[in-house]
Length: 111
Image 1 (cartoon, rainbow, N blue to C red):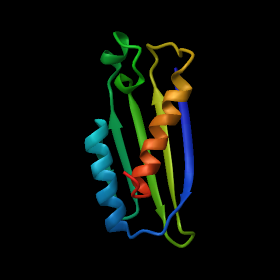
Image 2 (image 1 turned 60 degrees about the horizontal axis):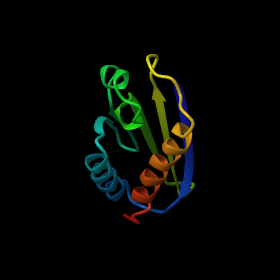
Image 3 (image 1 turned 45 degrees about the vertical axis):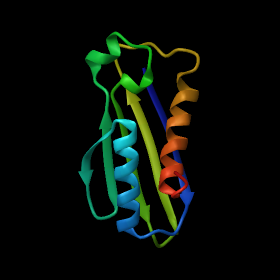
Image 4 (image 1 turned 135 degrees about the vertical axis):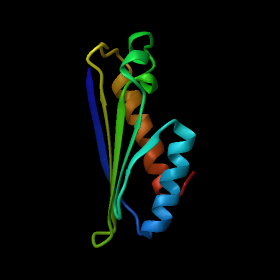
């Protein structure tokens, strides 16, 4: 199974404030920071072994990428779930979209 969702949100925020928001989001949602660059971050969670025994997409290997684009006043957010051992169920795409909605809300400072 492979699911991809992405969005670019209009927001004017400093890289420092954005980083703080992202780290709070990651901690609350079970993600680990895999890459922390000046204006780009990558987060991961889940594992192939957990995916075998679970229909919960939060257990599946997921990567979240966030890029700060200050000259456009936007932040790009994308999430990709990839699990060769899982089969997509009816609500998986909607649940991934909801996970992206949570990320965007944190980026905007709403949560």
